Image 1 (spheres, one colour):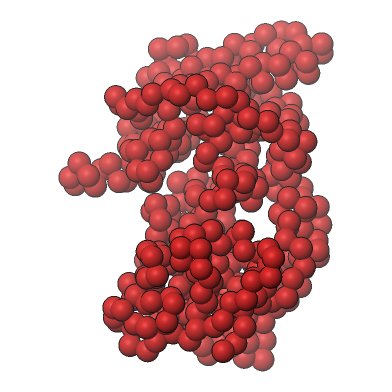
Image 2: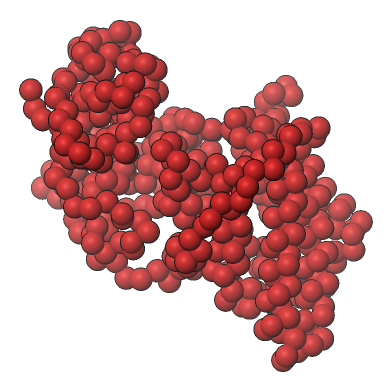
Length: 433
């Protein structure tokens, strides 16, 4: 395999020599099997305080413009849904670390995390300066030490002392693992002023993320929603549907049915529109791979896309999804609107939004609407790339003019249906005709 191919695999799964490097650095800094066992003993205490640690961590990141930028929507506001997703990832990482199992799989995952912050990761457009990664490991190290001192030292001073040393040694290994991905990359610091952050809201999100990862989230009322005729999704095909502003991929795969949230755990890409080879679903944005039958992220067996129960009832595909009113405030900030209405702030210039079964496009400040399904193989145009007034279907590359619906490039042959968009204040409405 060539160098490019090896780098691509490493970006998605971590370097093949990650385990060897982890053991080598462990020996160098003095991280031992006894240290790993001590860390396992601290797991209940660390897990207890993870919501606090994670909320402090992200409050810190949101204060600094160079790190805050990765959690913003195109309109400059904080993307709370994505922020909660990253909190779930971080919670999962430290829960896994506190388990004290430092095998090759864990080492490859750490290597993968390090690469994800650089241009050597799955997304070459992402680059988090090394100083911030180093600084945040130190931040977590201090937070863990604080928890150990407050919780363990009063009841078991000897364990507290051993735990501090064990975690300190482990953090040195993790720093080496994360920093080796950077090679010679550098970026200039601009020393921008710190920004205010609503810490209470961040703490609320961190607690919700922790409860989801621990399986302790509040009971949610579920409802059944018919989304398609079963005959319209033959075996080997899929359909992207929207239920209460939630994009879901429904797959008819090897005779069985699966439904996954259409939002990649990496950067929220339209994962369910990606290629499916065997059971492996690959996000079209940055190549992150999942098992379509379970939603499991292949690089991290403990991380999953949200999944939904699927039933075939009287010839219809029926999903079991959460009631909108049962979700937490951090996940549902949209006020009740009609199915054909949307907030114009959700469609900044150069973007698209799915409204019911219609795609709304913002072309230089003007809103246009077309059917969402490509006329070739029903690809979701709202998930496609918009360049000026041209949208490219993410399935097979057909192109359309969103202003007129005209076909600009095959394989599609039929034009799109178009709709009128009426704007009243901050609310847009799609109208037929």
